[in-house]
Image (tube, rainbow, N blue to C red; front, side, top):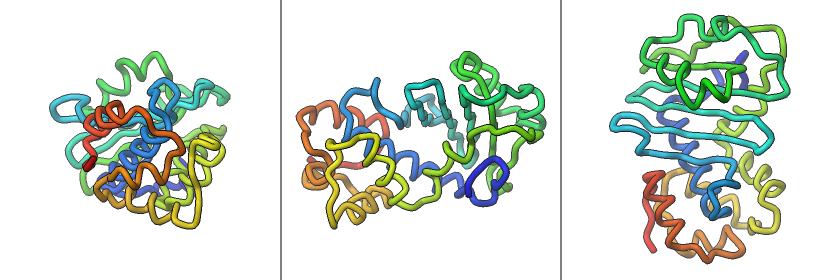
Length: 210
């Protein structure tokens, strides 16, 4: 399974970005209030960087910074023993240091740190023997729409409409297909904030037509 100990199972930087956008679009559809979303994405983090965030409301966070052809993942689990930051960021490329040692990462904390530079393999610092919760946080990046679907059924409950066509609809978003009103209405039980959804899709930089 995906974890800091199985980095070879992580997708490429471009595929990771597609998944991050897809699950953020789905969360935006299912929850109009950003404060209660689990996944969110900002394609305008800076002129040359994009940003993904996971937060479970109980203290766990995963923050991902995308640069051109490169990416760094910072994970923090409130229930895990806190490692020595210098160990888990050993050999961290200089281009990621401002992000990992600056805000908001500095205030949140780090229990695992993973990065990828262009065509190089995924890398991390010194792995510790204690649990870092990376397996739980990284699981959604396996590229299987069912992984998000099964999680969302529990997290979003009745707001998430599921039927025989759910896998196909979610797969369309995973593949980056243009979002339509019909797709949205087939996923969420009650969409009223269409203007807010448009703003969210613009922030994610995801194509839509409605």
